[in-house]
Length: 120
Image (cartoon, rainbow, N blue to C red; front, side, top):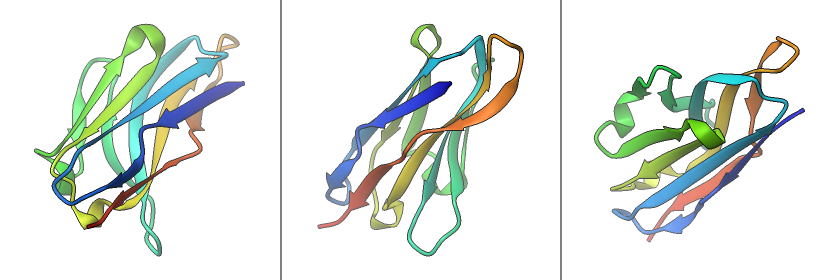
């Protein structure tokens, strides 16, 4: 079993900042990519940012220059620093990790989601 636990969501005014955290634990041999997705009401889930095991960060165009993804490999944690937040960033944010277990199986694991609301 692998667990991803997210934290850091909440209500913030436009232009404000939030920092999301996601900690992975359990049957983990290694993690390749860690990603943040989001899903707004009535919309499909979209990938916001990803961080590969090799240190490469990628972002969807709408958050470039405002969001920063980082990763702490020692404790299998990924962060998403969100600055200059806009109402259109309002969504449930999900953490995703591509995990290889000690028995050699690879699987995609998901957190439970954390709500981010940007509103005045």
